[in-house]
Length: 106
Image (cartoon, rainbow, N blue to C red; front, top):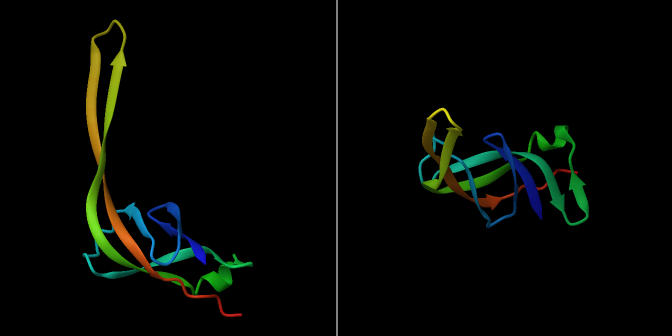
């Protein structure tokens, strides 16, 4: 059984026990429980994608860690003009562990 969930504008495929990196959830602390909105639930051969049914299904997850991702170097260069710019970026992430995926009521 797995589900497709939405978090931070991205979609993630999750199953119970998975640890997933999502964009930082700033309101939650380590050990807190969060609910993620569900876009699709697959349970064996049964696929649930009806938005009316999925409105009541929220995937339960626990916050494991807050950390930074790998550094990305951004370099801009224009030939023959002496224009050079260097910038770095490290994205903030939250690691969550999926604890439960409720089944759709039939």
